Image 1 (tube, rainbow, N blue to C red):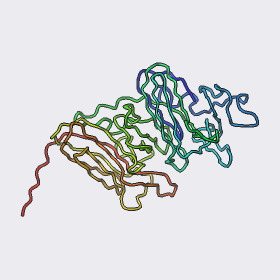
Image 2 (image 1 turned 180 degrees about the horizontal axis):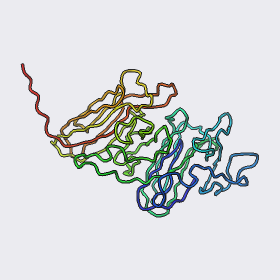
Image 3 (image 1 turned 135 degrees about the vertical axis):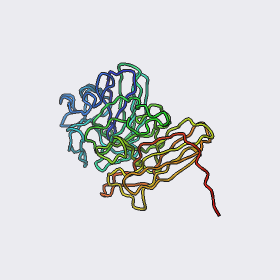
Image 4 (image 1 turned 30 degrees about the vertical axis):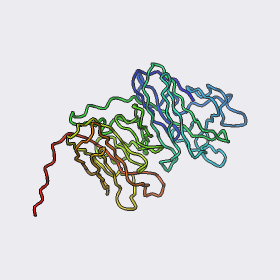
Length: 361
């Protein structure tokens, strides 16, 4: 599935839904859905397979998109086999059934050939639809975005359902106080959040590519994600955005910072509950904060938000700051929705050496 879009030379960002969701253009167009990104403009019946089938036969049948291979166009509530297919935005979607155990999408932008695999086999919400994000850097005024299902299935109709494709230009985070060595520590710059979305946007693993949906941060994981949340639907400790650690120890937020060996630093952050009914059944939720090999602190979350800090002496010229949840949690409504502690307002500043503690006997 391919779409062409004009954009300026800058970084662009995709917000994907449950198998993909992403984007609209970059320069002259404001952040939001792509043209027919919600697939509400349907193909003509003459370009559909006979006998009421949902299979699309014409390469250019879906307005603003070009397709190849087995592609179906469905309406909300349409039944395929023994499954009823919901559509989250509007009444239509480009779709095929979900069957594989190791689902993933390949997203590609040309020219520049930037491509990534986005793992989507884990469902993080009870409704079955997840918003995913992906980022790339534009190298031309005219770009082609391809969304591809690389899976090889016995049933050609098996595959992820795609809807609500939108785009956002990633802007450099506002300048932070010169003392804060971390970039985007308040998480105010990040993926496009669809209006009315109550489930946040998932940020997939990103350990090598410097273009991240969450500027300044990388996601250390094999296939798991973190959730980007907004203050309109979640409890955000400060500002309008934060990150919820929803995958336990299988994913972590990481940022590498230049440090001076022998210098003392203070790493501070806000940790709390996302206010989404997340339940910790065996003790409190816990977040581990690590500063390279120089120090580690575990913060316990009992509800609300709290400040925590770690003071350490740098032992290397580059220090890796890592935030990870130490437990796996789901919402208390028995929906199976994955959740976890929220982190926000992270800062790293140079500080004076802590006063030596004296022991009086």
